[in-house]
Amino acid sequence: MNSTGFRWRPRRPRRLVAEASALLIAAVVAFPLYWMALSAVRPAGEIESAEARPWTLAPTLDSFRRVLGQQEFGRYFLNSLVVACAVVIASALIAFLAATAVTRFRFRFRTTLLIMFLIAQMVPVEALTIPLFFLMRDAGQLNTLGALILPHIAFSLPFAIWMLRGFVKAVPESLEEAAQLDGASRSRFLWQILFPLVLPGLVATSVFSFISTWNDFLFAKSFIISDTSRSTLPMALLVYFKPEEPDWGGVMAASTVMTIPVLVFFVLVQRRLVSGLGGAVKE
Image (tube, helix red, strand yellow):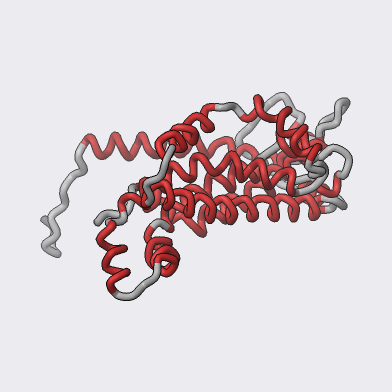
């Protein structure tokens, strides 16, 4: 006990091990991001050097100037933002309504529908790319942003519905009955009471939808064939992959710029994301 009356207690060995393990895992996860940002500010000579060092004594922004000075880069960024926001908003609203329906209502083939959601998660995206290509071609959606938005909504919904189902189920039915006794309609209960309660789950599913859509390369490469003005940011990386002499500085700078919106999105929703991943609403 010190002069202020505070008794110092040593930390338990298990807690120290847990904290050290968490720091180690965080360092391993963050190291690729650090190396990407470091390579983006390295001079060309250091990037091509055979001696890799985890620092640079001559940082430069030349790679970022080349990337941001590219004529179509702003358009690619805007296309990615439009597609990601459209997928997040649409999938969140549809998943919320669908999760409410399969949880609150009893109807025929309800269990079969839930099983189909699980089966849809098991099908690899690569196996459906060619059928989706012909579907988009017949619908006249090739070389449009709709060809990127619709498939991502479809692939985001099964996971989102299955996850939100637990949040909706955790909200007691007595709360809905009390709202009805107070004169609230079903739609008012849905949007003013139930929606705020399952919002953490919506945020958690939206994060996964945003990341998968933002980083998508397969659909962008398959469905945007001739109209490069509809390309997204992952396609912009191909500009710096030259067969004879790849511009690794440009690749890393463009990748860093691509990562910034994801980090900003995480910062904005981190509190609700933690509560959404931590569990459903308790009665």
